[in-house]
Image 1: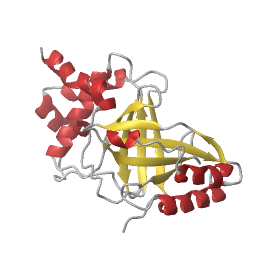
Image 2: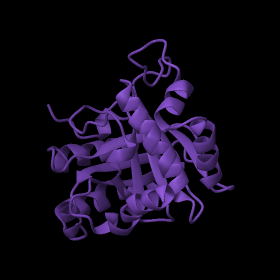
Image 3: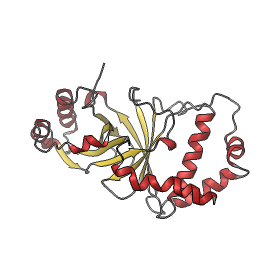
Image 4: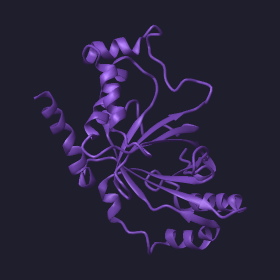
Length: 253
């Protein structure tokens, strides 16, 4: 019965998120500059952003991907948005025309837009009003069909525990709504590679003991094993580091 209740709680996330008027949507895409034209691409994007993306409503963030197969490429991020945002077409807009004329000459390749929705129950300390951090640990997770609930359960318990115990790190968990094969994005912003991405209010905190106390005897190794097994054998988890580029992003004083 407990497992059935869990499934009923999780299933609506995947059924209704794509057309959920109350969801918090984020859109991402990746861009690659032509060989030897990275500086020209960055300059063109910076000018376009300053001209067209200079308010909270039109804001765009840009990151450089610094690790992984896509290192050297750029990720552009739009959000948070409501579902109504995607009713507006851009193909005939002045902004689109400017991009095609002034930026595309320096573009070698791009991936299509990916539309994601943040799952609040799996996230912690996420505040859209805060300024972007210098870096992001961006993890893409692809799960075996029918085993998604094991990974979601582990992430939900982890978030619940960290919130309860005053963990200072930040995490946003996003479900891909449209634009590719089913996947999850785990986004962890931070400011320094030399500092832990969060600490607990109690310096003597023991994660395993607290987890097992909150969710049941030996629940941590069991939940962790099931969550790891739920990931696909090939390409089930890809971890990248992103670096925030202020000059190519919206600046709102």
